[in-house]
Image 1 (cartoon, rainbow, N blue to C red):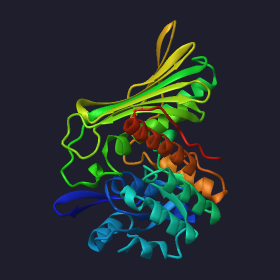
Image 2 (tube, rainbow, N blue to C red):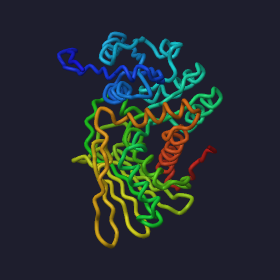
Image 3 (cartoon, rainbow, N blue to C red):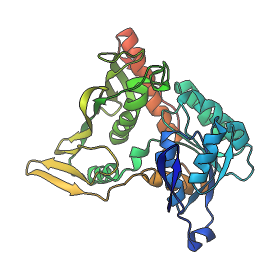
Length: 358
């Protein structure tokens, strides 16, 4: 590991390869889009993985792509997604672009026979999600969506406790995110159809909610508003979900409230589980019953490797022609709930969620 300087900023140069790792057959990945999430997690996680490796990146600004590639092992750099997808040495791509390009690049990669791990949200809407799933199925490639919290140790431990009956039957799941978001005018994160509190932040927590409910969502009622920020998209939302097995789900997002809070509470007939920090780097969850509250510790995921479990699971699944934990159907379900939430706010009605056959 060495240190390099780029535009006056110091960066760590990652090189985790050992003689033992070099002998392993690793899935060869290319990253489309070299933005923050690629720099701060995807690329470092690929460099550390024993099941995958980074061999190519692309960015429209070729000089930035080259500098990014040099930082992460000296892999190949391309000017466009089409050039990278045409690289015959690849097995898979990570699509790490704004949502506008997710469907287009997934379809192109699938047609080229490449497995696809797509950043969240999966697409503009559930119609595009279906197209992505169908394209990957038609070309016999694996599709994953980067809902990374599904493999966070806090979530895995909580699911294990629920499976053991520690809180009885689950009756309600609540997730919440609040914080102040300082986004400059013109940034894509506040562009219509791809930005705002719902598409940027709520989707992760809705996935967690769906994971704990562990059944299909039936109906959605929602409020999607701009309360404080001077944005063309929402900074606040509240989503209420009725599940087919009777469980109730409630999510709220506030991008106009300090300090940051990211939490989940799962209520059961005999107790509840509370995760007060739904983030990487956190080491405990709380189990409450009539005897009191017990703090339960887990091994935390630490930056910049919080995507390592997801990438390793994806590579293993793709090699075995199985579905990864964070699969395309997970991405579809989240988007179907989001679509229903927007429709509910627009009409003032409870909206049925369109399910998909897995």
